[in-house]
Image (cartoon, rainbow, N blue to C red; front, side, top):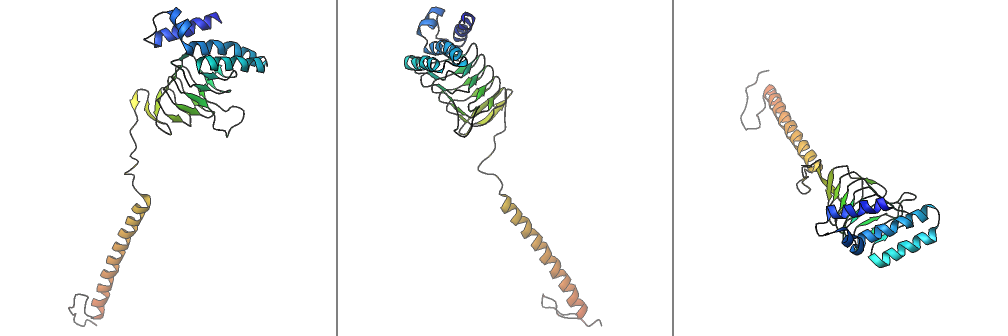
Length: 230
């Protein structure tokens, strides 16, 4: 427990430029308090003392404004910055070194059973107000933009933005943006191809008819006449 506490305090000092010293972090940081209270709640939950586990988690929620279900798995060095309004579900897993900002939800969609909440890999950063919903994995070192709604797996070393979230950067390189407005219409393209084929067929028929009229000695379509050849 003491080693975990040291790791959590060290994570705050490394990632929060406003943190001045360990004493300030230990006494005044609500995100750290929420994680500290979650540790014994998780221990009790694993040993099936469900009422006591939920009691501690609700006390932590009352004191910090952060709701972490006692069944959630929280790794070492997790930094909850500001923290107000964060909700972490029962089967969620938060890997070592993750950073969560205020208003983040690690929740479910209501459609799944058993494993219902997301798994964050190591060193994942989740921006304020982001919602990650469902039993999938966000890969190591991924970044979720503020306000994003993530509904499917995110690869490692990626950045996801938007509603629903999509990956815009992977391994430090931008992914080409898809033009959602000027996408070619496949029906229109097929109609153009059919029109071109029809035009070619009409020209071919007209040429064959002209040759047939010439053989029969009939006036051609231009109004001229041909001598009898038969």
